[in-house]
Length: 211
Image 1 (cartoon, rainbow, N blue to C red):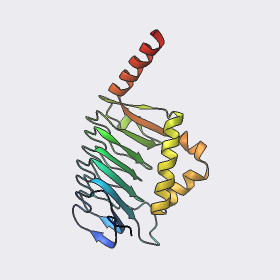
Image 2 (image 1 turned 90 degrees about the horizontal axis):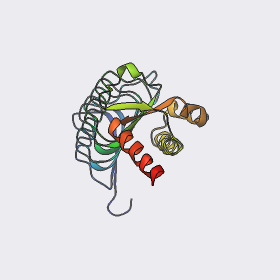
Image 3 (image 1 turned 30 degrees about the vertical axis):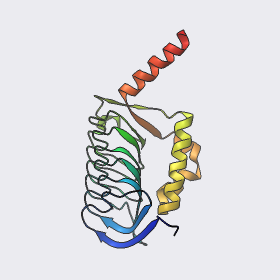
């Protein structure tokens, strides 16, 4: 690889804090599963987690509290994660195929894509960033600070780009199905956004119209 870039590949089961404190120029690929705190406080780099060949069903490949306090970097997982996914995330980008309870808790920045079911209390304390959710259940969203909104054209373009990258890096069968008909797939997504962001956008639009 070019100078300053490290690519490491792993197979099997990773313990706690796989890829914690990861920085730019490092890519970790894991075929298997990892425990809690994957990508904790990462500021750059990339983590890719895929199930072993021949794995069937909907694998859970990541433990709890993934991307805790992350400020940058990317995570792509062709499986689901446990509770408190992306808690206190302030800049990382992640694509995952399901999350447990309390996802995106206290997020301030960053982008999360969930291509599967999500647990309750989604978005609690979330004041920034965004999440794209496939077939979300609005009864499980904590609507004190966040709201589900339809995708705009710019959202769709960014989301398709993330799905294409996820499919390329992980070989995700679920993502391949979505990309077979991306226009139809996009109608199934909603964007989870902080209410404050929407209020600011509406105020800016009103100011533009009155100017």
